[in-house]
Image (cartoon, rainbow, N blue to C red; front, side, top):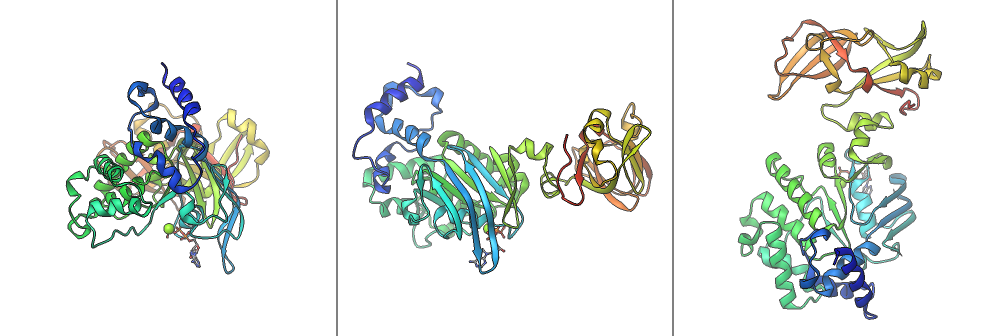
Length: 427
Ligand SMILES: Nc1ncnc2c1ncn2[C@@H]1O[C@H](COP(=O)(O)OP(=O)(O)OP(=O)(O)O)[C@@H](O)[C@H]1O
Ligand SMILES: [Mg+2]
């Protein structure tokens, strides 16, 4: 039998009248936490009803919707007019600089802050007036805290004890979560006997063990060193692939956002500036802030003007005149005469020596300021008419500091922004 047929059958069979939205009732599906099997691999023969119920409930329950939500502290708006739908089972990352409102959004969803205006739905329930404990969310805080006097096992078991989960089931859930996070060998240790990374995983485990409808994670990897952060990030991706629990994850690290998010929302000053898949944000930023924020090293942003001349459209600034490719020019020629910002990603600038043929109007001269070899690639920092740019070139580059070099732009990847509105000029 196909997995989805099996699930449909069981769903019809098991929706019991005793099942309510109440937290403890939801605990009823808990024995089947972490089955670890993607839908396609489900074997009906050895699954109990609880497993199926989890999947079924998630389908219906775990969407999160913020409807024109604002949060003001005095006259400071931490979040402004936020419209956001987090899909069921999605891993949504909110990214933005410090103070942009990321934690406030999570705290609003968790019920730790009350919105000034707007509505918040979890599943189909309006939760504005629901206490945090009744929202079926688990939050990992930015400054995670473990109980210092409890060992890892008890730290993991604590949220279940609070919910009066029966002991045998509790032990089973703790065991499975510890296994999932590779901390089984640490269960008897106290937090102070753990490394930072191990502690962070215990904190994650405490959220996961509850099997909530939604995870809210506030920079849960920020205290790890780079290597451990990358490893734990990979673990998080795998955990999410297995559990498919709706997750809102906050970070100020755009690289982390790019690797983790099904979709990414970029916040600045409490406002959601763009929401989309990582590649959409990277390739088609809709405004200057997102253009500069997503990508490392950042997109080069140069002040320029759009100029129509001899049937061509040019982006001209001090020290450069680049021809807009005809297919794009015909769509945006109404902007001729405007002050713009020209955006070029570092990987779209090449050393002329490395390029067999440069199309007309695609190159400019630059004074090399610094060469930064990174091993697999080399960053070239240069000045064009007084404006700084960075190019990512081959590690074999012969460019050297203080050279005057000819650089070539791949004009298929030009980004243009209206300097006044800060919005992308699109076709
Ligand atoms: N309880 C509060 N009282 C007053 N202002 C607050 C409060 N909480 C947050 N703010 C303000 O709201 C804004 C958003 O704060 P928030 O903590 O959501 O930012 P963040 O994006 O999580 O930043 P970080 O990356 O530094 O954690 C900031 O200007 C902050 O000073
Ligand atoms: Mg924060």
